[in-house]
Amino acid sequence: MTIKDLVTDLLREALKKAQDRGLLPPVSLPDPEVEQAQNAAHGDYASSLPLKLARTARMSPLALGEALVPLIPPREEFARVEFAAPGFINFSLAPSWLRRQVDSIIAQGSRFGEIDIGKGERVQVEFVSVNPTGPIHVGHGRGAVLGSSLANVLSAAGYAVHREYYVNDGGNQMDAFYRSLWARYRQALGVPAEVPEEGYHGEYMKRLADELVQHEGDRYLHMPEEEAIAALGQAGMRRMIEEIKRDLERVRVSFDEWFSETSLYRDGTYENAMALLKAQGFTTEKDDALWFASSTLGEDKDSVLVRRTGVPTYFASDIAYHYHKVHIRPVHRGVHVWGADHMGHVPRMKAAVKALGIDPERLHIIVVQLVTLRRGGEVVRLSKRTGDVITLQELTDEVGPDACRYFFLSRTPDAQMDFDLE
Image (cartoon, rainbow, N blue to C red):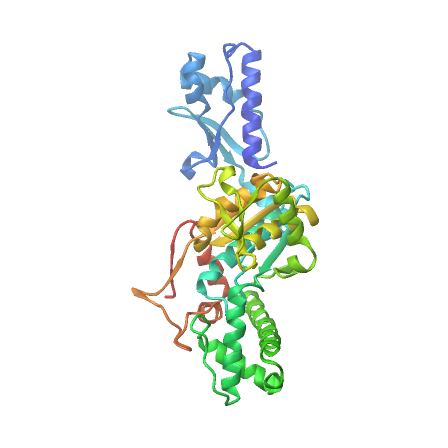
């Protein structure tokens, strides 16, 4: 029980005693509201109970205070309990009791402050989940630290927390990554090649290609092109994921599982999820594509699940991912930390989980707004090292992990943030 809970209980007991003894009329009694005192001179905790009860009881706040305070028994936790005008009951903690808490805190060590409101309920916190097509940058760091801290808090509150990174290792973006890396790999070996216009042009791709040449040599040049692109791309993706892991660990962010999107297609989860939607009448075919009939669930428009080319959309993968979490694992509650560019995805994802027979209230989505990096009054846009975006690694090198975590948590997720390096 917290001290605030104790104060609330003492006030409830005092109200009951006052009515039993005829000091208060037989009126409906409010539940006492207790707050930490704003002014330390007024004590540590305060309740405006006499003010709130005055009209109902047809008594002055002073008379109510004089009736209630004597009915609050002395306790070791409090040095004083007193009435203060215009209508407050103030509680001051006893210094001797406070000093004794130090020994208790030391004895509990890192477990101090832990509670068990979660009762072991399984909660999955999925965060970061950036496509493994490049390094983690400063903007991703905010969601990483928020998700990590939230998972820590939930663990301390008695929940069985599973920290998960959802690896988008399929789809058009990964194909563009593979083909960009193939071009840089060939260039590194002196073979003429151009990076696709829609590909990844950052300096990190040259570095990644050079590393693969150093470790793998020219063996991919001796394979059929499409086979080489796939094999080289897989090798590059694995290296990029390891780099992402290292950068996140620098700010003390780690995961219990790195869940592969493509595994949903290998183990039949995707087919089962789509079959369930069809059986429930939530799919429709038009324009040679398969659509999720989200308009039947209150959305403004339907959403494409499978393109006319037969390729599933990211939305279809996300639905299969949630099906897996609830029907395969299962997860009691899911928390997702998404970037601001996913804001429009929230309502249709809620509609999708409802169509899967899942209570949307079990899905909590936190949208994290953008980060602007500054050095004093100047906005910092590009890395001095590479001329590209500023990576989380560079930020950690300059200000350290503690400063990163502190500043990323200093504003609510829905507020845009200025991160001043100075």
